[in-house]
Length: 431
Ligand code: SAH
Ligand code: SF4
Ligand code: F3S
Image (cartoon, rainbow, N blue to C red):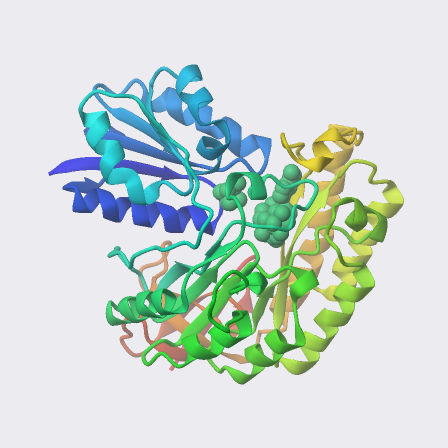
């Protein structure tokens, strides 16, 4: 059977899109392979959120072009951004397709096989439809519920490469989840750049909290997660939906980005730190054992030592279990691109290191708090390092490795007594 090699960069949206691309290739008679040497097609699914991932794409093309006879296709956010220019600049690339073009891959591949170089970055601005597709599933799966973003945070390229916000129809989402549950999935993560805007463009009377109630009713599904929630739209209705639906896990990724109101305003985030803190406190009071995670940008244009200090204060006050932090990277087309990128790179690096060091102390402390307690773990398989140890996740999305006196199956949910907190994971035993 012919083979396709797929390399994915970027966020969960791209992971989901790559699974869909693999399924379309499968339909056309191509098995997925990890080895480009044996593949007829190589697909690079790209990310342009910062400069670094964009540079990785060029080195991946450089690596692949030495493979004899392989046809290289580039998709995802860089492809959407560059379009025809990409074909012009990279002679070894045979085809480029944008973030709305995946459904048209059949036609694109047909043309490429006839020897044409193809670029399809057309967007569809009406509603989105993604037919349920088959995939090699584990116990946990992503389900895209919406595409695009209308928030235009001043630093962010996503609204330019993923287009306007569009929601998937409720029926389509529920059908896909039911299909996944029938093929052994126990946990779904609902994906959108801003899930709180779900349903805005649909005729149906639906919003994200209402969708959670409907997903919670699906028999056989055990756990529901979602990313990402924008703090400005994080509502009391959503807090209640998280509390009232037992399958919705007590884990919330709520990116703050910066602790200083001055910087938040320049970022066009549309909330102050005080408003953010109030919502988080309410969520913590309402949802038992809720843990939080967040994204941060350091070295945004104009960020002073005192602004950065506000970010440090914020992580100490909120006590996130995990954070993801990045050095500001100017992106073309965005509003902040016209601001002077005036924080020197070594200062950005120092701030990043400091933020991560402070966070490590907080994470260590919070992880220690699990020790001596029992956690419900969804078994995902055996630990990579030690085949006599099971591995899974607790409700708060933390990896738990544990020994068990009974034989367990993938997909079981068991009570594990936590005996030790390691750097990023927990260790325990199950009787
Ligand atoms: N929709 C999500 C995030 C998408 S991008 C949200 O609103 O939270 C993921 C993260 O990348 C962002 O949260 C931000 O922290 C970071 N990011 C985005 N643009 C960036 C840039 N130009 N420079 C550095 N980090 C950036
Ligand atoms: Fe980017 Fe802001 Fe949209 Fe997130 S909400 S994707 S950070 S513009
Ligand atoms: Fe990157 Fe596109 Fe996701 S820019 S972060 S892959 S939406």
